[in-house]
Length: 421
Image (cartoon, rainbow, N blue to C red; front, side, top):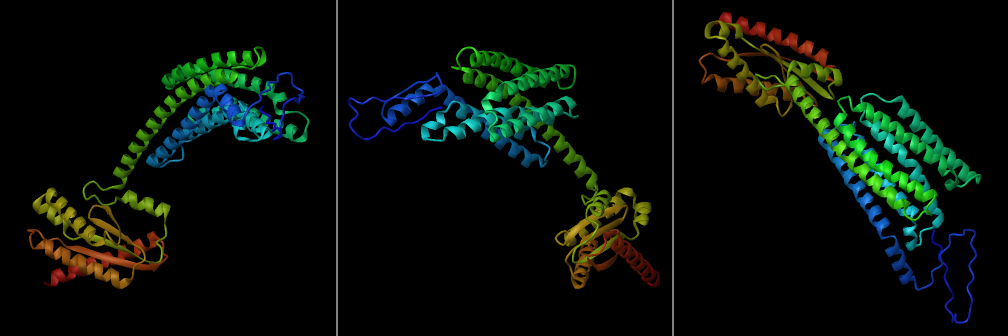
C-alpha cells in the first residue's frame, strides 16, 4: 500500500525525516506529487493495462449479454452475465491489489478490503458460469460453491470482529481455489466424451494456461518476493476468459438457434396455414393463459353456409377458396378490433375486448357489406351465419358457448328464409 506523507511548506534543508514501519518491505520516495504519480504510473503500467483490459472486456460481455437476452427474449442466458461479473471482479482485484488507485488518494484500507473480497468472490462466479451451461446441476460444484460462500462470510466476520486480517486467511482461499480448479478439470475431462467435447477442449486449453500461470504466481507470492504475481495471474486469467468467452458465444448462438426454431414451430402451431388466421390451438392457448376478457367484451362465432354443397358440386378446391374468402372478409372487418381465429372446418371465432354492443352490430353490418361486394364477382355466393354474446369481464369459454348457440339459431333462420324464397 502507498502511504502519502505531506511535508510542511517550510525550508527543509538540514532537517531529518524519520519513518517508522512495522514491515521490513519498505520503500521511501521523496518528491513532488506529480513526480511520484509519474513514477507509480510507469512502475505499474502493465497492471493498469490489464485492469483496463479486463474492465473493457466486462463491459463488452455485459452488453453482449443484454443484446442476446433482448434478441432471444429469455432469462436463461445467465452464462454471459456470470462471465461479465467474473471479469469485472478480476479488474477490481488487479487495480486494488496493486494499489495503483491510491495515486488518486483512495483509502488504503478500502482498497485492501475490496481487493480481498474481489479475489475471494471470483470462484463463486466461475462456478456459476459452469453450472449455467450444464443441463443438470453438479452436486460437487454446488458443494464447492457453498464452501466458497462460507469461506467468504467467515473471513468477513473474523475481519469485522478483529480476530484475523483477510490476508492472514488467504492460504485457505488458495486451497479452495486449487480444489475448485481440480474439480472443474475433472468435469471438463468427463465432457471430452460427451456432446460438449468441443467446448471442453477450448476450456481445457484455457485452464492449462491458467494453471501454469497460477503455479508461477503462487511461487512468486510465497517464495520470490511478490514482485510479479499479479502479472502472472492476470495473463492466466485473461487466457481463461478468452476460452470461456468463445464457449459462451457458441452457447448463445445455439440458444438463439433453438429459440428461433421454437418461435417458428410455435407460430406454425398457432397459425392456420390455409387462412393465416390464428388457429384453434392459439384459441385454446389464449383461454389457458387469459381465460377472462376484460371490460365490456364480446365473442362472435361465424360459420359458412352451404360449404358442403360447394365441395360436392364444384370440388374441394372451390370449398377451400370459399373458406379463404370468408377469412379475408372477417379479417378485414375485425382485425383492428380484436383477435380472429379459425376454429376448424368452416367455423370462425372473434374475441373482442372493451367494445360496446352497437359497435359489434356495426361491425357485423360491415361484414355483410363486405360479403355482398365479394359476391358481385363470384359464381358461387358466399354466405355466413353469425352469432355473438356480450359480457362484462366474462369467461371466454362461456361467451363462446353462448355465441355458438346464437350462431346456430341465426343459421336456422337463414335456412328458413331460403326455403320460403
